Image 1 (cartoon, one colour):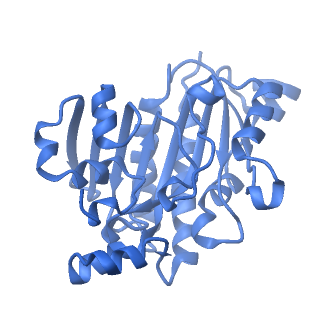
Image 2 (cartoon, rainbow, N blue to C red):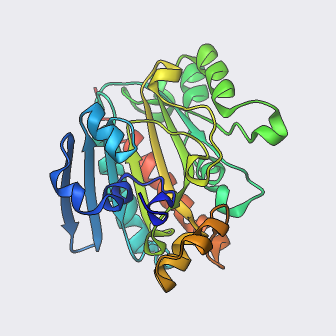
Image 3 (cartoon, one colour):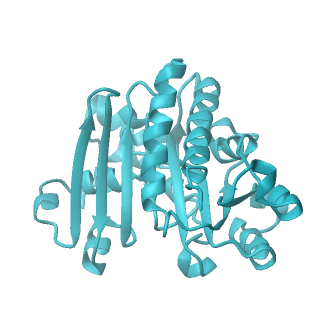
Amino acid sequence: MDSWSTVRTDLALEARENIGDKAEGLHGVSVEERYDEENDVHITKVVVETKNGAKLLGKPMGVYITLEAPAMTEPEEDYHQEISGILAEELHGILPEPDKEKSILVVGLGNREVTADSLGPNVVDNLFVNRHIVREYGKVAYNRTKMHLVSSLVPGVMAKTGMESAEIIKGVINETRPDVVIVIDALAARSTKRLNRTIQITNTGIHPGSGVGNHRTAINQESLHIPVLALGVPTVVDAATIVGDAMGEHPVVLKELNNMYVTTKDVDQQIQQISHILCDGINKALNCLGEG
């Protein structure tokens, strides 16, 4: 394996692309692609079906849905609504028993003080949470007979709390007993064209910090003992990616840049826009439960 192939990515789509020609004959991994021409969104579904496929791809077994929207960073509210609608459909489709009432905990991972890592907290800030109201007044408070109970959590970072995010989430789960956890986090990409323009949805959970080599305890069904969905947007790329794109492979340079990550100069504005798209998509997905 050459040095370029070691560039990190959190996207299953890129992991598949990274193995090149081998992807065509990759057993245990299926791929479905479709293009929403009206909204200019490319949707790819990668399903890792076997342990061998997981080993070759370097991703856990499960479903990975990627939405690539080139104009997602543009300040067009109508387009953002279209993307959030597509996201809502895909998220609803990957929820276990989506039409059955559940208690759902939404977790925003990341560091508020580092803009490129603040996606999770920003999404949760504007989320529609109702668990406390329904527990106090019942569903009649929303004139509904059937709805998910939604709660949220921003566990912060270990440098400030002294605790792993997974430890905090486990404690909250033990007290509130949700049926499903949805985790939002900023990701790392291999391709600059996907930076802030791609959303990944997966039912495999997440390994916080893995894309930038900062491995933390996994947040998944195995560790939490309930289904865990993860939503993420790549907000940084490995600096070696940019060098590789511009100059081609150079092992020495790539090695020197291996621990450097970069983001866009207008990341503040883009994170704000993207967080609203994700928040709107989650709200729509969790509030489309039909009346019982």
